[in-house]
Length: 183
Image 1 (tube, rainbow, N blue to C red):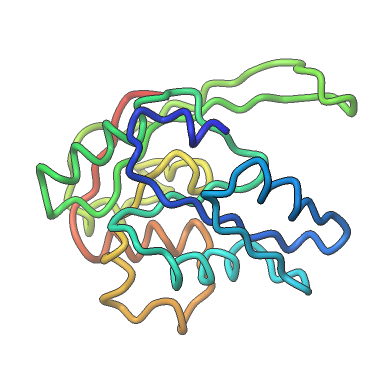
Image 2 (tube, rainbow, N blue to C red):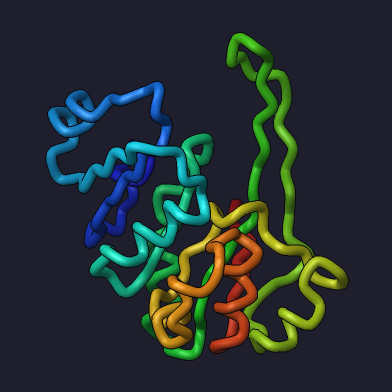
């Protein structure tokens, strides 16, 4: 629902469910008929789910949240796409994150802002050289929009697990990166 609330409306949503014990197929397809919904017969994990999604996605940009991620900025897609449309060299745009800690009843206990220590546009190779050392890596892949061609040109999908670290590494190898201060 948070994705559908984005001000940027040119989106294709692909949901890949590999929770073999939970099958909300009918509910999702009735409530959101515009969504492509894939129910796996076996659990394949987040990296392989991203591979499936990348293989069928038609868009120029890719966003890969997990089931416990959500957006708080309705303009995130619009702002990120605007940056990448103005500069073809940028392979991803990423922001900071807020972690919400919950108890066993899913009640909020506290919030922690995780502000990146890198700002603005940077050469991807420079970022890659210092990723997780001098420069922070964003939390997971959810605060980031990637340019799909950063992965297509590497024939990436058949060669490597698509973890968040490998997404950042390959995108950084293929061009510049951009960090925004927004959460």
